[in-house]
Length: 171
Ligand SMILES: [Zn+2]
Image 1 (cartoon, rainbow, N blue to C red):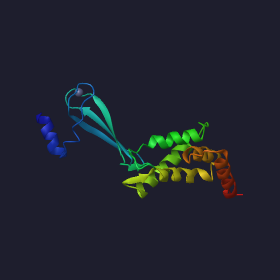
Image 2 (image 1 turned 180 degrees about the vertical axis):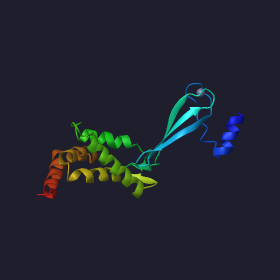
Image 3 (image 1 turned 90 degrees about the horizontal axis):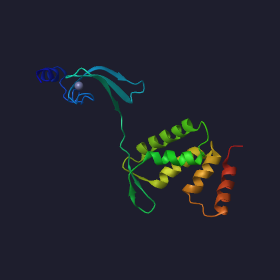
Image 4 (image 1 turned 60 degrees about the horizontal axis):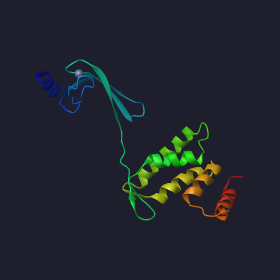
């Protein structure tokens, strides 16, 4: 315990030391190395247990607080980025090599949500953001997404959207 108190005095930080050893369960470990990723979104700390000398590491990643989603019927729902991803994967019909494209769209949408709607976001706005990103570059995925999202009920709804899309596509 003396060692810990000395360390706390040296580092001036209890939370840096407080991390349970996965091997012996001791509550305190010392940070021996700290690495920050190039994009500064995560920090990896190498640690050594102050009791058994076991070496392990911890990852610290930035977490974002997302707004509450307001559904069309005014119900509130917890934000779930996975839903955006799942909707897109469906729209692309799990086309091979599409993961990166989907990741790009998801991160763009997430960034837009955080900057424009810090507290509440209407679910239709999320849908619009996704469709905006699909419309010109991925017309087929756009139509699939829109048909679910806009709840097309008839072939006519689909045809109308298709027609509009054709008119808007770059020649
Ligand atoms: Zn230990």
